Image 1 (cartoon, rainbow, N blue to C red):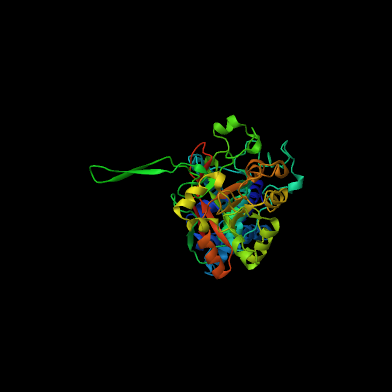
Image 2 (image 1 turned 60 degrees about the vertical axis):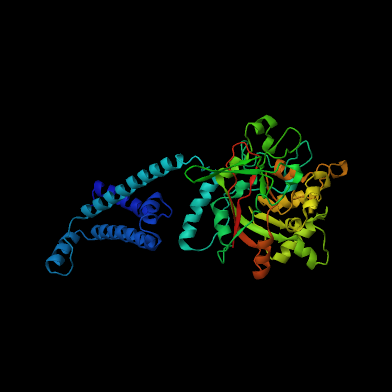
Length: 468
């Protein structure tokens, strides 16, 4: 007859068996993944299963045969098995002790992990990212590939977005009323793992031009100077003066352009922006890592028999983007970073000093870019990309359209930055990436960027790399 104390131990044993079988627990992470390494994970899990199965089998045998103890002792004396024949309660007690140790280690591991997380102020948490990370632990263990988690927030189509008083659909509130990251919220462990699948050769391509490439800087921005100092002990120091983070390859922060006068992304006021809301520092804290998708608009136009001048106000339509996408053979994924090569940066590299001086005045400058239409805004939102980047000074066609027929989409920045929370990158160098893409037919890469950690900043150097 099994006593109550035995029943309690049996219940605890079954709990231990279930606990040992769980994937992604703090115990396995702390004791197996970090300590033993990937080669021993399955062995450790198998050992846990075997241990508890032996306990359960022993208990079942004892329940069926009251003489199991004497039988075991007789077998031991006969030399048939090496088993001392202890009472089943002893074996179950061992299982309970083992389970207790596992629970204690789990609690300690959780406490240590939480303490370390709090000591890293640059790491920001996102509720849905935490679930994605847990989902992908098991998937990564089995090397089965990666899929987007359903825990990421659902995004409505453009026509379902509520419109602001300015007449453009806005995503305000989708990621929370205090959000400052916009569509970069779509980046997380899932998109990072997906982006890594684009790496085939491991080559790294820089996507920035030198800081002094645009000389003089466009839009009449100041030209920076570098001051070098050699100290008495022979070390070399330097300082920069009048360095505008947006005078070269750059990111526009969500505080750079208002959705409409007085209101910025997520309803922020000008006073809040001046106090640091929606600044580049928010993106710098998380970093920008995702899948880059190259759309070579210049090459597509040439192959389609429609060449153009990158230094002219040539407007690319939705049809142009779609044709380039189909030619590249890619399907967009949520969170992609779209890279638009127009040829402007390479065109600029061929200009003489007088021509560069002339177009540094914005009243003399023209550049190819995206058309000023609601159709374009709808397209970019509906593909649910996190950012759109180009080698031009504006991404959209320049000059911008300030006339009423083009309003409210004459300044596409208002829709992308202010209403959607979509990151914008400008003046990037995409020539080398495009050349490599043409060579091997791969239009995707893993894109990594570390914006300046500048509290209150409205822009940053891109500091961007493509890993293929």
